[in-house]
Length: 452
Image (cartoon, rainbow, N blue to C red; front, side, top):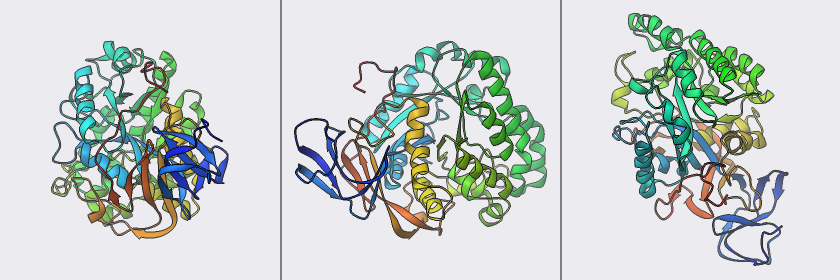
């Protein structure tokens, strides 16, 4: 299968097991001008550069649709360069970055400032969310159509200032402005504030899921789904942490897509809090094994549409503050693929299902042009992995400015060997190649002048 009669590639991947829409295929991949132009037995092709993929699996590029890279304003924790460097070292080819920076990402100028930073510092493909707020609701229909915008992100709880959208009238105004799917952090702010004294009184991080209980997440999820139905807006509910939410959302799949996190699928209370302390603190919280089992059931029965890392770095000094003054959030973009490959190894999901959750799923949910599948004409983005490698995650491997991971010391079976973006290797065997050259992702209907 070839896109043209010209049998020369800029990059030729040879001999790997390729995950295509047909399943696992032992084929070669030819890339030219950033796209896939040939698939199959390409022994007759010439190439400027070849990549020996024998013994390896070539996945469509992994897209992490929830990261916090802290730039501008909080770059002592992370910036776009270090965050995307971690992404490509972990086999991730594209990221969606969140709006809770300083200043918040609420205007066209805020969005453009991030795109300008990424133009010189991003190692991977990228897009940025606009925050949905009472102050910009009237302009969201225009803002969400700007090139480089991943869509609208709404914080029903766990945010601050103009980014917090806790009241139903504010939420309805946001949902009525625009057409793209809206990403939601669903925790009920009023309930969180009413119960905060529980955490303040105990001072014990093991009470984090007691303070931020299941009802705080479920009630917010019920409210936003009802508002989505009222306004006709499609929703994407982020980082589901409980079986209660998962069972509720399974009844609303006609208009709601669902994200799960490796953190919630891997860590469980109370053990993680006893072992990691506030390093395990995140919002919504890691819950007990029964809720984790329900999340895995959501993976198996198809309720979950994609995975994100919710990479949210804080320095160790900040995380060492007494609970609950300690900030919530963990690193995650660099460990997303190793952690999930380890779950594949242990039989918790298939490699094909992992591809659906990390490549095809994000492309389908958000309408990303050219991404999500290994097929003729698609962008030549690949996460190349070795399923037979056994390796330990270590803090010293983490590129984040935070310099730590909750998985320090964990052994993983399966590892990212190379990251290839638009036909250009950017990481191989833990070594970065060349310099940052990531481009904004394209979305169907957003930038009609871009070539899909």
